[in-house]
Image (cartoon, rainbow, N blue to C red; front, side, top):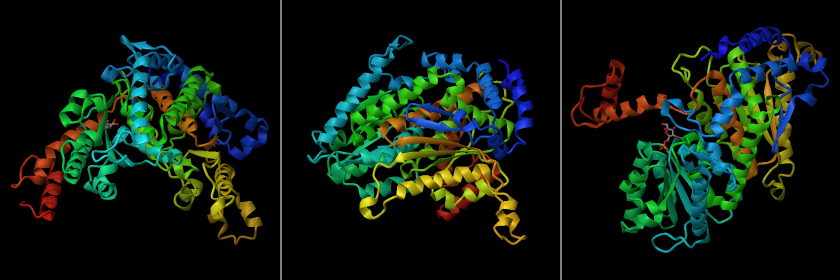
Length: 548
Ligand SMILES: O=P(O)(O)OC[C@H]1O[C@](O)(CO)[C@@H](O)[C@@H]1O
């Protein structure tokens, strides 16, 4: 395997970087009146303006050539057709199959994937309809009003983010809550606020072996049985989403009430399948299917569009450009929608668990920097917090601004007419200020005292993408998520890594299990892994009033 940094395309970009990195966006715009008309792309309902990036037409040509040199076209095909591209776990990677239409055909490793996917979707839909209509009741005969999703990582962040994004579409009077952390504060906060007779727990875990989820699920089960006074209540108040039927049964959930998926769906790529059950119960199967159609539309764009017009490829390669050539350390995602408040957190798992790797798929250490660090908050909240650093700090932080033409509902009736336009005006103002800034001359010309001028200079030349969509519908959410999935995939291909395993999270889990007795045993124990940890164990035990 040739390292990407050893290709002619990489060297060409390194040379080109020396020329482009000294240019200001002001100049790039001034010398090319066609720039805005050229540097945009549409995919399904999403419009991307990437003209405010520190690139020229030549940069785009070189970046897409690099994607080609990495074998991106072949790797896309390999993923979509079920090759075992997750090499360290010897698995296919087929989250795109979760949204294939019913009449598509895909057989992988002898399995009719499309038939299986739709079988599960149909069971989910039938179950959701029963819960939504009130036909499925709790143990005492009352309808379900709250679903509590118990899961963590991909079994939490996806459904929690999507629920928040689409909760305006809830039309059956059912709300969702999400419990993930092993911190007892998480589950108790929810249990304190829900009615046991009208609550359905969805225990969501791909492996059904995750400590946090199983612990929280046990707590919820005990709470329920105590409140309803009958073990049999569990059957009406607990369902499971998992790939592991045996463990679901061991836990005491009837596998008739289990919704399955497969090892070729990574946890962080799973909420468009059974892991999205809580969302489907809230918004209904029809909306859920609209979301899947949105995912699929972006999949098709990714599969078919030439790289220079391919939204995920362009955004991925811009990320590579800043990470590997400009040395950018992080990447901000700034949705101008309160409904996307959890989107940055969701993207953190998607991108960082996927691409936070330092060896290539063949086990050889990487040379390039990998794994963009994503972070962000909804606009305008971020503006009043960290945008100062984006505008005037010493670091380069490329940012994605995501906006919508229409809100789900405005606040006109409440006297808030025009609020949404104000929100959008803020988005546009920020990207313009970041790109073009304000010079010392312009500031001095406003009569600013000379000593203050340097403090007010806005350097500009800070790159942003602007994604604009008509409205945050289920379909648009699907498109957005698929966009970032494919950005993540493309970057993984360029860096030559396995984006679909996550071995780096395992050691900590094992050590936590080993350390628990050291914290809880009546007598102090040896065996802390290092002197610092041993001292912290003693301190913790002392604070808890235990013998040291
Ligand atoms: O769905 P599970 O098997 O409970 O796993 C939860 C999460 O834990 C991880 O394996 C990381 O520890 C994630 O990849 C996954 O999404």
